[in-house]
Amino acid sequence: MLKIYTYKKCSTCRKATKWLEERGIEFEERPIRETPPTSTELRTMLKARGGDLRRLFNTSSQDYRDAGLKDRLEGMSEKEAFAILHETGNLVKRPFLIGKDVAVNGFREAEWKEVLG
Image (tube, rainbow, N blue to C red; front, side):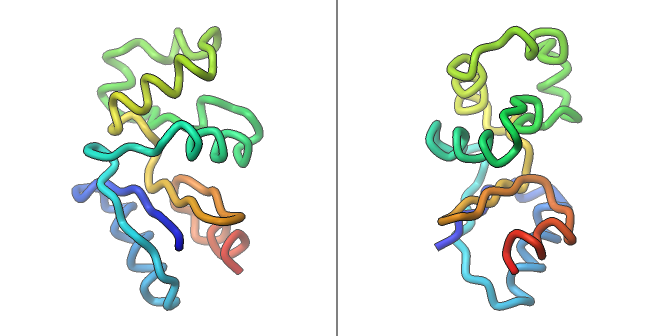
């Protein structure tokens, strides 16, 4: 079963879940702020994103700017980045879709079609 981490006020998250529903793709929705992805899920996404930690972060959020992560991220360890993301789910780039052989975040329809078939 696919899991999708979303934020209820995020229009992109709503578009992604609607897209999945329209295609009859089953998923379990989780609130990203209250239950952020696990370290294992973050590691899977990191691998899918070519090892680029920045691609796990919601770089447009005020929390990202307030924490000064733009300047800190380059020297940050994977363990430290995962701790920050797990502590503050709002920092995770969403929607965050994960499942067996599926790991994609952000919603770009063409990419999701390619990943989900």
